[in-house]
Image 1 (cartoon, rainbow, N blue to C red):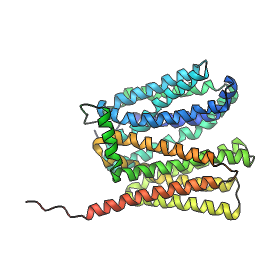
Image 2: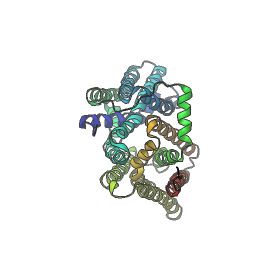
Image 3: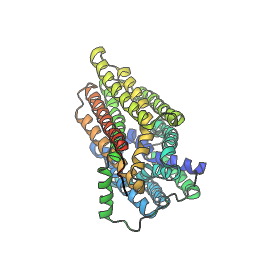
Image 4: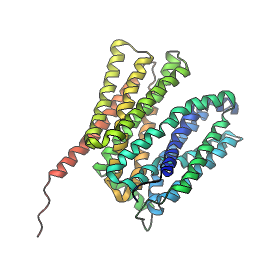
Length: 403
C-alpha cells in the first residue's frame, strides 16, 4: 500500500476536525443553554469541561483498540458514536441528557483525533508521514476556524440545537467516506489486549525519551494555544470592553498564520532536517512568549499586544506540530496506535491544567497568560532538546563487537 485514496484522506481530515469543530462551535452556545434550561452557568460549562475529560480518557483507549482490532473498525465505531451523541444532545429534553449526549459525542470524536495520524504512519512511514500530516492539518484547521462564525449565525437565527444538527451532518459525511474508501492499514495485529498489556505499553512509551520528548513538546505547544483562548476573550470583552466580533476577526487571522506554518512544513519540511525544524519552532515560540511579556510590561497592552504574540506563536508552533507527532509515533512503530492515543491524552491533560491555572489566575492583566506561555514553551524546548541530545549520543556509541 503506497498511498491512500484522495477521498480517504478527505474523510480523515473531516474525522480529525470533528472534535475541534464541536468544541469551537459549541463554546458560544453555553450561555444560551444556561438561559434555556435555567441552570447555573457552572453547570452549563460542563458541556466543555466534561468533554475535555472524556477526550483525555478515550484517547488512551482508541490506540490500543486499533492495535488489537485494526484502524478501520475502530475509527468507524468512534465516528458513529459522535453521530449518536450529537443526535442525543440536539434532542435532549433535560440538561442531564444534554451533557450525556455531549460526552458521548466527545468520546466518539476522540477516535478522529488519535487514528488519522496512526493510519498515515501505517501508509507513509516515518519519513513522509510528517509531510502528509502537515497537509491534512492545513486543511483541517479551516473547520474550527470557521466554526465560531457558523455557531454565532445559528445562535442568532435558529437556536443552539441547530449546532448539533451541523455536527450530525459532518459526522455522517465522515462516516460515509470512511466506510466507502478507507482500507485497513494495520499490517500487524495483537492476539490479545488486556489492561495489564495496555498499561505495560503506556509505561514503555513513557520511559522512552525518544517518545516522551516529542510527545511533551507537542502537548506543551498545544497548551499555549489553549492558554491564549482561555485568557484573551476575558481580557478583550471584560477588561478592554471590545466586542466578540473583533475577537473573532483576530482569531481568524491567528488561524491563518497557523495554516501558513503547517503549509510551510508540508511544502519545505523535507528539505531541512526534522530535528532542526522542531528546535527552530521551539526557540521561535519561546522568544515570542518572552518578547510578548516584555512588550506588555514596557509598552503597555491593548488588543494588538495580546494578539500579535499569539499570531507569531501560532506560526512558529505550527511549524513543528506535524513532524513532532510523526517523531513520537515512530519511536515505537509496533505500538503506533497506543503512542498516538497516549500523546493525545497527554495533550488534553496538560492543556486542561494550563487552562484551569490561567482561569484561576485572572487578575485583569495579560501577565498570567504570558507566564503560562513562557513556562509551556520552555518545557517543550527542554524536552525536545534532551531527546535530540540522547539521539546524538546513541548514534555515536559504537556497536558492540561480536564473534
